[in-house]
Length: 157
Image (cartoon, rainbow, N blue to C red; front, side, top):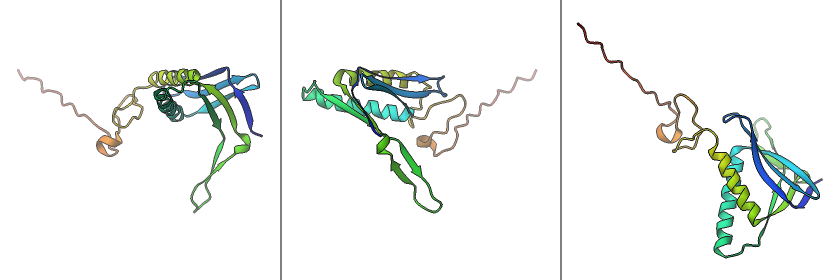
């Protein structure tokens, strides 16, 4: 059974855990109920980019009293041996709600703050940087960068 929350009065995003181990979630609440959706960092980042693009287009046209609709449905990937993966969308379990222009701006801003609060990313491939060498796909074709530092020979007396 799909759930329609209508216009939400509370909409936000947050994380649990330390950078590199964080889990991200989007939450919404209306008079009809509430929802909490676990999402990947990349999904939230894409949501922020999409909202920013839509907001820029709407603001350019001066349409500021816009209602956004957000719908999310579980996706199941079925992988049978020797077959191409098949994506099944479970629309009967979808959750949808409406939110305002201002809520979209606030949500995008909050997502951007969360994205910058994590581990630093490689400027070339956008992969999170951990301590140690980084294998940048864009720079060198999957090979780790190893820097060899030779110790200077001590002067003999």
